[in-house]
Image 1 (cartoon, helix red, strand yellow):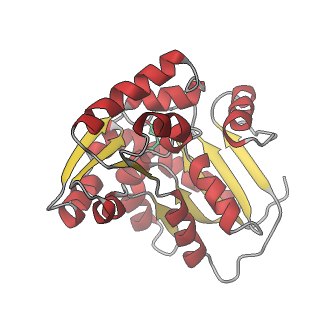
Image 2 (tube, helix red, strand yellow):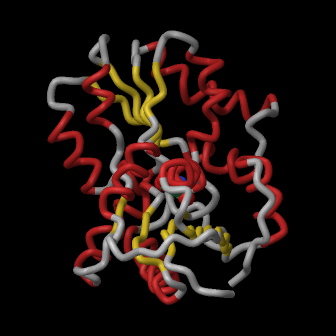
Length: 258
Ligand code: DGL
């Protein structure tokens, strides 16, 4: 495969595609290289040390394949690894996900926000510091929702079973008067239609994907060469990956295995 300068994007699975679509939108002239670590999805229930090892290996792979910037498009991976990656490669630009508590706190009228996330993110120091910095005067209800990752990876969000699970996670937030629902897992924006149908006008969905893409644009190396190539790599089953990317993003890719 010809090597272009590229924007490397990684996630435990297909969730990072919700960030990648924003990168394609804002920076259409640059090549992208997406890595779905589906052999190890989900990351959420894993220990930070284990996630860190996966992410370091993926970052090395992306760099070897021509990535000039790496977007850790996974909250769990950002929480476990971003700091280590920056320490290990001090001159390489990384962009990570931070739970979007700040914009939710700024927008809330009820003073109550809900954060949908996974265990690794909820228990990480990054989330703790975000809450301390931005949410001192706001009630934050954190919901660990691992089944939402499964729903997206299995593409069953449109089924009655999938919708019942989404409803189950959202009901306590609506009952507590939360008017902002933070997507602190990159898989969750793919449930936007289903979540919107449940919350109606009672709450807003907060998705940091676009802000992250803008940050990528800001830190892009000045000598990065444009190139029209979009590669998709999975450590899991390429056939299943292809089907899932088509369902979620509407693009027919030629996936690469590892
Ligand atoms: N997309 C990942 C995140 O943003 C999903 C976590 C998982 O694999 O459990 O955290």
